Amino acid sequence: MNTETMAGLVIEQDVTENVVAVDWNDDRDVILTIWDEHRDEHARTLTRDQARELGSALIAVADTAESASARPTHTNPAAFDLIRVPSISPDCRDGGKHRACDGTAWDHERDELTTCSCSCHDQERAE
Ligand SMILES: [Zn+2]
Ligand SMILES: [Zn+2]
Image (cartoon, rainbow, N blue to C red):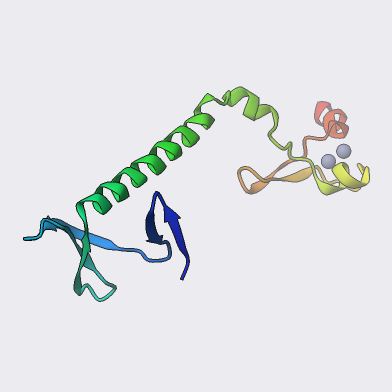
């Protein structure tokens, strides 16, 4: 089993828990009610400290994820457009066999056939 110690709390990573309820018992421990794959209910007992530790560990990870995912929003869409792969047929791009090119190329972004954007076709298009 793939276990990892996080802030003193051992988390079994490859277990997905469907937590359907959170409650506390007479000992004032925190009880997680969990559904297994058959929707049978199981209770997991955490001490209050464990529950807080788990909660703060999750918040810390969420904070990290939030700041990580915030980065791409600063990417200039125009700059991204510049690194867009132009649709040039393999004949024109790799072999320099411009005469073999039938003027079509695959647009990998839209996943469809489009016109080859190699400059060798500028002449044909102008005519
Ligand atoms: Zn070409
Ligand atoms: Zn071409």
